[in-house]
Length: 81
Image 1 (cartoon, helix red, strand yellow):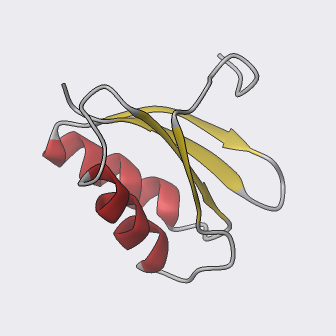
Image 2 (cartoon, one colour):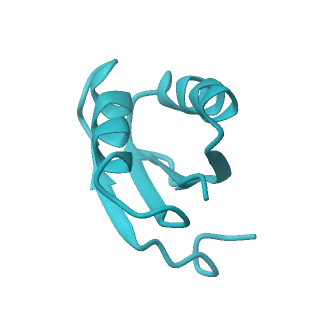
């Protein structure tokens, strides 16, 4: 699946933010949205993907897809129903 096929309900732009900023912004947004919401987290920090992957696995949320744009990644996370 490509990001052209995914339509995020909410975008969190954390490009330029250092660790743990992107994760903290994502977790903050997850607390503000309804279950089933698809969040696009944009990050230029290479440590974000493994952190989000591990967090999603332990929190019950789903890392749907990671799209590499060269200068940043879009990480699509579906909030646990």
